Image (cartoon, rainbow, N blue to C red):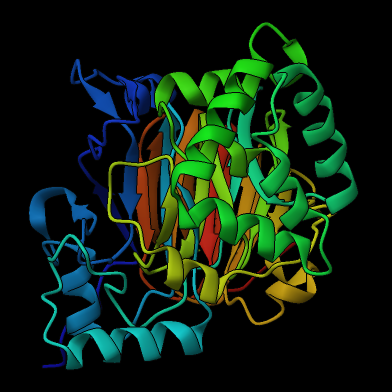
Length: 390
C-alpha cells in the first residue's frame, strides 16, 4: 500500500518570545488571546530552529522543522507577529554571499552557534519587511541625505553652547559623509561621549527632536542616539509597510506589525541594545547611501486580496516570498508551502475535500501547492513563495 499523503492544512502555533523590548501581553493583545503577564515581543511561525512552529496535537510532525527534515524541503521564509514596547537595536542584515562567508568563517574559528558574540547563526540572508497592524508603528529606516542631517546638527549645535558637535559635523560634511560620520560615532571615545551628551542636552524640550530624548532615556550615553539623527524616522499607519533589504540600517521603535523575512537569524548590531555589537562587521555590510523611500506599497491582485511583494524594488528582485493580505472571500493559487494567520475576524480555508477553520489568532500551515478558497472577513495574512488570485 502507498503511504497516505500528508494533510494539506495543518493547524500550528507557538509561544511568544519574551524579549525585554516586547510590550506586556503584546502578542496576546494583537491576537485577542490570554496574555502571559510579561513582555511578548515576537511570535515565530516558520521552521527556523530558533523557535520552530509547533503542530497542534503533534501530528503529522511535531514542528515545521520536522516537516523540513521529513520532506527534504526548506521553507524560505519566517512569518512573525512583532510587538515592540521599546526601541530595538540599530541593525542590518547581510547579503546571501556575506551570510554564507560569515557563517563559514565563524565555524572555522570554532565559535559555538549559541555564543553570545556570534554574528552569523546560519548561512542565509535575511531580507525582510513589516506591515503595521495598527496606526503609529514607529521606526528608523535607511540614511537621510547628508544636507538634511547637517541642518539638524547645526540647529542643535547652536543650542548646545559648546563645540562638542564640531568633530562629528566635520566628518559628516566630508566627501563620504555618511560613512565617515557613522564610523566616527561607532568608534566611541571621549569626543563621541561629549557629542552625544551635547546632543541630548540641546534636544531637551524641543518637540522636533523628541526622539533623541526618548532614546536617551532608554539607552543613556549610547552613540546610537546620535546615529538616529542620521536616519529616516518613519511612522506607519495600519496596512503601510517598510522594506528592509540587505545592507539597510534600521531600528523598530514601537508598535505592532506582521513581519515576513528570510528564514534566518543573522543580525549585525550597532547600538541601542545590551546584546553583542560588532561595529566593524556592521559597517562592512551596510549600504552607505541616502534612502528616499523604503515603503513597500501593496499590489491589488484580486478582490479582497493585496500582495506585499519585495520584488517591486530592485533590491528585492530575487526575494522568493510575498505576503498576502486577505479581507474577504477569494480564491488563491498557492504555488508551494504557505503559512496563514488571522489577526481579525474569522476565516475558513478549503481545497477539494480538505478544510481548515481560521478564527482570530489561529495559524495554519498549507503543506503544498493548492488552489485555496477563502471565506470569511477580517484580516488574514498568508506568507507564501508565489501566488496568484482569481
